[in-house]
Length: 250
Image (cartoon, rainbow, N blue to C red; front, side):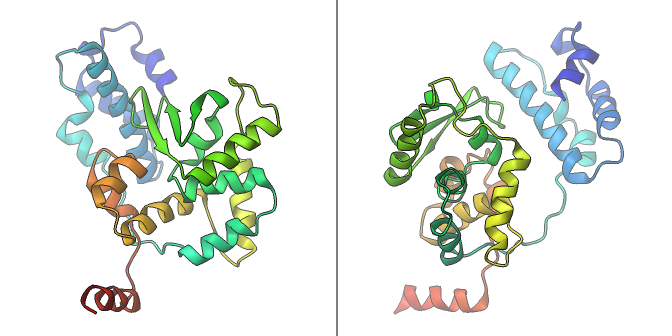
């Protein structure tokens, strides 16, 4: 998308690009695509403008923040999702024999990483129990993900055993290939599992384990807004609600 944006506006001063021009560009780019895609494209462009504003300390209003753009390219309405439980996720991960596939799923389900972030990792990005995300979705220069010591050790052993260079991708496969890994693992337990379900599980499990919402939002999911995080958290069933009340007041 940014390539198309550069083709359209590359010869212009960035602070001369108006909201009306930005709206027309987004409308042409997204056409009749579904609302979630329209919102995603707008969010990426907004993040790009915010990155330029922050990095170069410029003084102009982000054209994506106009009222009409916010209304037309608003988030899609998302129903409450069913979140895969801890026992099921554990069973899927522990019965996955291929270490590569297990690590790909653990980085999502235990650390809340996006599948695209997992696939871009190189040896240089791994530092003890921390992972550096380069050029993240947020538009920031980089972000930090925290790993459990066990996952960190398995990841470093995987890199060492396969002689993966510091600049080489740890998991050199396509998005569709990684998605099939997750789909196959889910089917073994009768589930239609997606990579995003694992990331959503990481957030919901942390929240229900007593981790403050702000930590879930800013550290695990790395969202800018708590409202975005709240859409990730799964529905609480009546039995689960009763169980929590019993624990609080027993």
